[in-house]
Amino acid sequence: MITYPISKINIGLQITDKRPDGFHNLETIFYPIGLKDALEIVESKKFHFRTNRPEMGSFEDNLVVKAYRLLKKDYNIPPVDIYLYKNIPTGAGLGGGSSDASHTIIMLDKLFSLNINTEKKKEYALSLGSDCPFFIENKPVFATGRGEITEKISLSLNNYFMVLVLPNVSVSTKEAYSNISVKKEKKPLKKLIQFPVEKWKGEIINQFEEYVFNKYPEVAKIKQTLYNQGACFALMSGSGSSVYGIFEKEQKNIESWFPKSYHTLQQKLDY
Image (tube, rainbow, N blue to C red):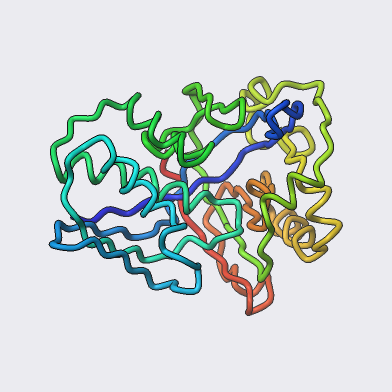
């Protein structure tokens, strides 16, 4: 069985306060995009995990493996052979690892007919990461708390094109959060997204941009380049370092906008 875990962008990201447990409360929109990994799981005589990115570290630390171990505690599932092809960059704010974990839960449920309902899948996913529950359903949501409290919203960008830019910069989420300052925004994100996309510029913000742009000026330059090329709206996703621009029309020769070492991707938004 094979599936293709998607990624996400953040439309706005506001840190509202720091919690007693050391985490931060936030407000954001998780919006699914079509940049995907590939995940294959088949029954096997012995558990085996492989990936095209062995430099990612010990496989026991991989969220896919943790998701399998988590379900195995509660269900009598046999060993499996898992192959993960990583296409979604790490350290880019796109949620690739979280998506892989959630899709592992979904696939194991289907493969072994476990009949786990959606809310229980989300519960398992949450134990693996704050944004993992989003990837169980892959629909645009307004997220609060640590990102685990989600509310479905009516937001569609399917008439727009997205240009996603990935520089050679990997931002540590832990480092980014340790340098963030809480700034309660006067305008609620939930209301701002009701405005036309053309009105989002300067209103919908990502509070991580201040820290990341100061440390990595090339990331700030990407955002400005997207606006110079006619983007209706541009923002860094998550804690970085990817930056996206939303355009009314398909763009040509986007590779020429940035250094050759950058990875660029254009997709029509389908949700």
